[in-house]
Amino acid sequence: MLIIPVKDGENIDRALKRYKRKFDRTKTMKTLRDNKQFSKPSITKRAQVIKAKYVQRLRTNEEQG
Image 1 (cartoon, rainbow, N blue to C red):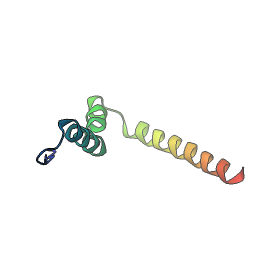
Image 2 (image 1 turned 180 degrees about the horizontal axis):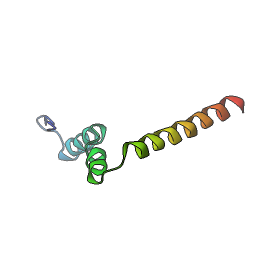
Image 3 (image 1 turned 90 degrees about the vertical axis):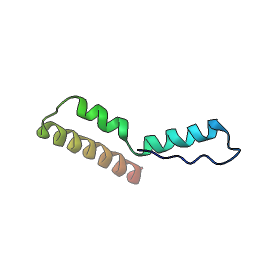
Image 4 (image 1 turned 45 degrees about the vertical axis):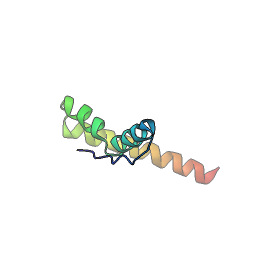
């Protein structure tokens, strides 16, 4: 549960913006979407390995040139 204290005289748009930012940082929607459909552990591990290879390739290319 997210609690956003609203100060006296604070604009509601600013409070909504703080709420949305806090909501995104907690990754609530990401976990809900991930739990919507089951994926095998081997598939999730394979996706992590592929992503790690991609990031590593980007970093080595950045260092070289």
